[in-house]
Image 1 (cartoon, helix red, strand yellow):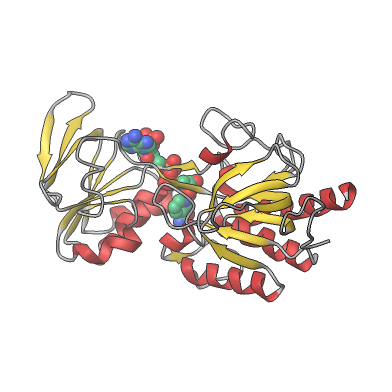
Image 2 (cartoon, rainbow, N blue to C red):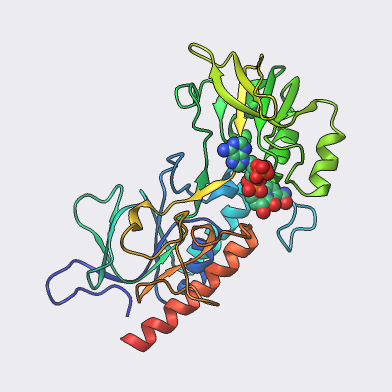
Length: 326
Ligand code: NAP
């Protein structure tokens, strides 16, 4: 199989095109490459509301719960190893990411951000485009992104040396990133909308034991203040409605993620939050020949290891489907 010219003169038809290069996409690449399907991986361009090259582990520091690394491993280092392993078996990785798909055509057509007008053609497509960080959607936030507002502590923490900053969110991400930020910042105020944190006990214990971290609970940020850079946030107490200003120069937001599925709207079945629906115990989507894996179809677990496992499932499903249909 592999690359072939089709009868109507199309340049090249790949057996498998994989959209996304995080743990799910690269695991699918390792498996399909070992099955001699010569997968082409289209990886995102780092747009903050889209598919991140290497996936979200590129935005983390130490990963302590990925099996096989008892001393932990840096997220970017782990992804570098995934990539090397995929390339070793012949996977080709191209940057640019998918910007449009036509899943009504056979072979499927995928337009790559840096590929011009001609689509890539594929018999099977594995969707592993992941998810991106949600923003608060309050006045001042969008304008001050990159000027004190960030969704990536590991990318931007360094810029806040000896400053007073805040982190919004009560989950594991918010606390893990708040702890990381104390390496640089003078103080980190965790702002959370309830009086109970969602994060795991171990993470809560670590955050509470950190002298630089304080908590502002039952509070929500209603405005980010500042002209050319963040100078504070206006915070509302959710019980009393009272407003107060917190003087900070950096605002980090870690309130969850949403799937990168906009280009599949109307073509693949999704749930009300935009996650691609897969058939039970499989990676099969509503379109035969299209498979989904990783955070793009995972509303619940969202772990690197579960993404990798589902990437393996998608590769095996795609391999079987190609065998049965060609
Ligand atoms: P999450 O668990 O969904 O937590 C999101 C937090 O943001 C919640 O506390 C939520 O508040 C808050 N929130 C949501 N929308 C908000 C809004 N509009 N305004 C203000 N606050 C808002 O997300 P996550 O922390 O990114 O974690 C995702 C998954 O990855 C979890 O399963 C987590 O355990 C895992 N994870 C694990 C580790 C680790 O083990 N080292 C590290 C990071 C993440 P409510 O609590 O009120 O809903």
